[in-house]
Length: 262
Ligand code: SF4
Image (tube, rainbow, N blue to C red; front, side, top):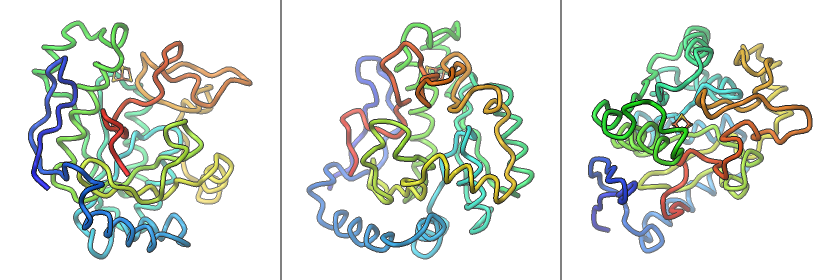
C-alpha cells in the first residue's frame, strides 16, 4: 500500500514527520497473513515466550519496548532484562511527571541493567507553540497528551518494525479486547501481559523481589503525569485517579485517531 502521513490532529495542526505505513491494514493480505502467523505462534506461550517472539528471531534489533515506569512496569521490564537488557526502552518524559517516576526509572535501570532507555521529550517548538505557560492540561488534555506523548512516541517508533507494551486487558474498556499480538500504525505490537491480572502482577513482583513505584504505597495504583493523576480512595476504580473528572481514559499513544489497529 502507499505511504501516507498520519495527521495526528488536523485541527490543531500537530503533524508528525511523514513515515511509511500500511494505509489500509485490512486490505493488505500480506500483513493479515503475517499477523495471523504471529498470533498463532503466540498462542499457548506465556509472557516470556511472547516477549521472545517480539525481541528475538526476525524482530531481533527491530523492536522497542514502550514503558511509563509506572505502577506495574517493573514486571515487563524484568522480563525484558532476562531476554535482552540492551532492548531500546522508550519512555515519555512529558515534563509533567512525578519526580518519583524519574527516580524509579533510574532505580530500575540500575537494578535490571537496562542498557538503552530513551527518554523522549516533547519538541521544544511544539511546547512553545501549544503550551507556553505549561497549563494546557487544565484546558485541553487531548491536545496536551498529543504533543507531549503521541507525537514524540510516533517519531521515536519510526525505525522499528515492532513495539512491545505492558498493557493489560483489565485496565481500561479500550484494552479489554486486546490480543497478545496486534498490528497498529504500520508495525506489529506485542502485548505479553495482555491477560495478566493484578494478582498475578503482584505475585510476580513478590517472587522476583522487584522494587515498587514509591507512589503505589501512597495511594496511586495507576500513575501518569502529576497534574492528571490523583490518589484513589478505598472502593474506587483502579484507574479513577487518572484524568479524574474527565471522560478520558487513554492518553492516545495506543489508540489511533480513527481507532485504527487490528
Ligand atoms: S497526562 Fe496530563 S499533563 Fe500529561 S500529557 Fe496528558 S494532559 Fe498533559
